[in-house]
Image (cartoon, rainbow, N blue to C red; front, side):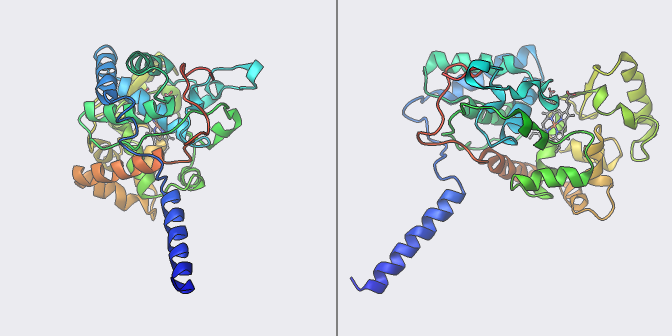
Length: 319
Ligand code: HEM
């Protein structure tokens, strides 16, 4: 073969490898097809039962997945307990993670371990159960790329990269850019997860009676609710609290976003996020399509694959 052909095919292969590497080709929806063929139905049953007794179960899982992926990628690090002997300073003690629910993850993990011992990582369980939780609430279904492995370390300091409800829009956007998520479409689409679940008064009560972008009638309702104190919970989506739909965005158009960070996506004059909110408010299909794409992007953040990390048998500790 002439050497120029050899050189150009080698260059092509290299280019292909770089392109595939960049999109995390190691992850695949069929990763467990032979090692845990019933994985989908096992997780659907376990999460379905959890939702029966706690309507927030799906919301709790997707929030845990987001907080996992924002800190050094989707590697299950957020699930590790403190473990001084192994040098683990848990991410759980940090402000954004103090209100995550780890018991639901354990419940699903136990069901998966019973069906396929030692095979499915905790990071993958978060990714897959996120999709199932969204679908159970009426949202889109998609093929979840799988094959992540679990970290043997945690990064407590790294939790500062998780968006806070007290951040400005600029700060939220910076945190998304820092992990190579887009600060307009990904930010607005993924924030749409606030179409279900709850938040504590302590995360938004500073807006009551002071924020010009908070509907006065809604503000009065919130003032009543928050007489219960900073830990009182209320719906993130005031119109259809437990349904995965586009109403999160129509709420924003009506100054009925619960968190200031939600409302800022729509109320910040001149921001590129405004048009995206309007687009999703006007079309559930456009919201769902974008949400799926952004969820796959989120799930692809720096996964451990191959022989890196491990498959934890207990999500709370390394093997
Ligand atoms: C973009 C900036 C974001 C901010 C500032 C933010 C902030 C918050 C806050 C403050 C809460 C309430 C926590 C509490 O009261 O303890 C919350 C709940 C929630 N967040 Fe976010 N979040 C953001 C993005 C996301 C993303 C990208 C997702 C998922 C893809 C997500 C999913 C959820 C869900 C489902 C809940 C309700 C959980 C439950 O009911 O327990 N959030 N978020």
